Length: 154
Image (cartoon, rainbow, N blue to C red; front, side, top):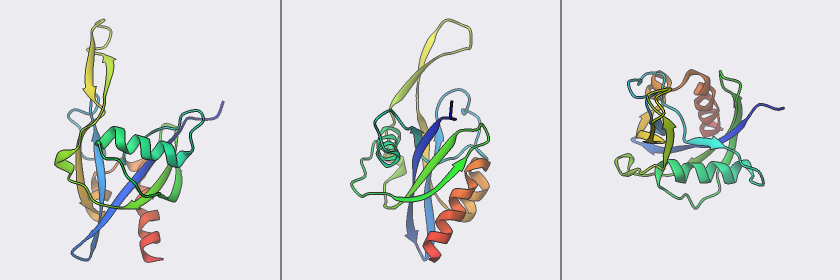
């Protein structure tokens, strides 16, 4: 069985002559007290009958509450530390990170307690310059920033 495939969008914008990227910090108890190394692109599983681009747009909307109308540009496919592949797309755009509204997920918490609790998929979103993003991002997603820099130079 092939490893799971996810798809996501690296939203970027230009501010004061410098590129910025929108990253999210996941919600839920595992990520609660994590900051450095916890930020990532909005992404999620590609479902049956769905293209990677369709999945990336759906996941972006589910995790930020913002529907993107433009077609994202294929950026790079990476393999994360856990073995999952992520097909990333780039799109220039803007949104207010304070206004994001994510869907929730349900999990048993505390573990083995028998109690189900709901948590937002995304706790926070933030615009970061590329150097800031390099310092804060999930290490296995750092190649996304290299690919975006190449795209912006090219």
